[in-house]
Image (cartoon, one colour):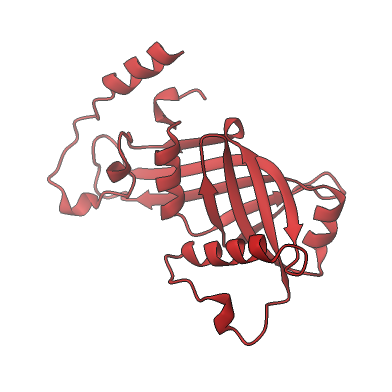
Length: 197
């Protein structure tokens, strides 16, 4: 990463970024060599070794056919905050992004009801919705839960504004802040990254 001072490596900060983002852009390998990309809701869990992302799919269609042929996928999560008429700390915008690659397994309810239900429940958390328990539904939805496993080494994140704590992750309302065009002091971030290299 060229602008290494914008890189976010800490798992708790990456998780906090994912909590802010509602849509995953999922890239699937198409037969013509051009990625097939679709926006989709998601849920996730993360630890020091893996980012595990849960999605949902109907049981027929192009994406299912492609995933059955090649289960490798690319993931892109992003959110952008633009303030073109109010420069803040030398910036006219701010963003958070996470990209990853992994492999997807399609889970059918009858084959693994516990994992299917776990993924189903986590999908509700994407938009900060209250989980609607499966037992409250009249029937089990006829869909796959896609479970994407990404090694943590294949997960990268960035932020325009420096992130040091989870509290730094949500966007600042620059219009409610005093005018401030002094650049961010990121000397501590640069020093920490140089020490850890």
